[in-house]
Length: 241
Ligand code: GLP
Image (cartoon, rainbow, N blue to C red):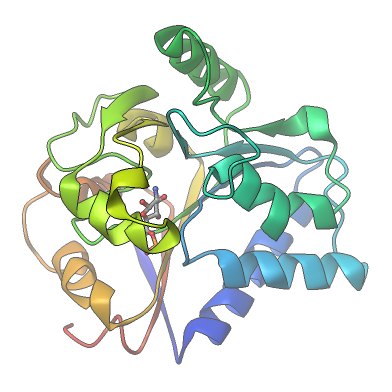
């Protein structure tokens, strides 16, 4: 695992954008895996800025998002469809047919997971952006999720619902389920870029970078077995290292 230490959130976002763009430029048809949450918003802002400055084009890019809540329509401000559209897709030249986000409104959710997973297997992700959950979750793969999991439906941890309640009116509105790429699906990405910022992530980051076991009880620990992971972390997040 390569660790890039940066001063703060801005520097993390800028560094991440540079890595993504450089990687995209080395590929004819880049496949990018995107994440949601607060962490990558700065990265998306930088990508938009660099697109506007003509440093990058997304015309030939294909994207896959990690996850989506079950039961929130695309127009709902808290859906990840809405988030991606607002923060990135509406500002760049991505072709709508090349954008993939799990459909949490699908009538047959199991089928949706299978179809989504197959599509990823056919279009291997070149670079996957990841954030880190307070309990070590990646995507929405909560502690206890099998390392062999493929795209599946998850019941969200109460701690995750609580952490994400800040985006909703109240915790009762936070969906109880989500669709997420599985851990094995994520691990098949050729390169992984994990972004970690802020002191509230310092325990999780210390556990990831420390010598503790690779265990399904701490999903992110599996990343130590991947051969191309770059972690960009800021000073606050690195406080307990
Ligand atoms: C959320 C998302 C993850 C994200 C993580 C951290 O629940 N499903 O993809 O990486 O939790 O979120 P944040 O960046 O807001 O701390």
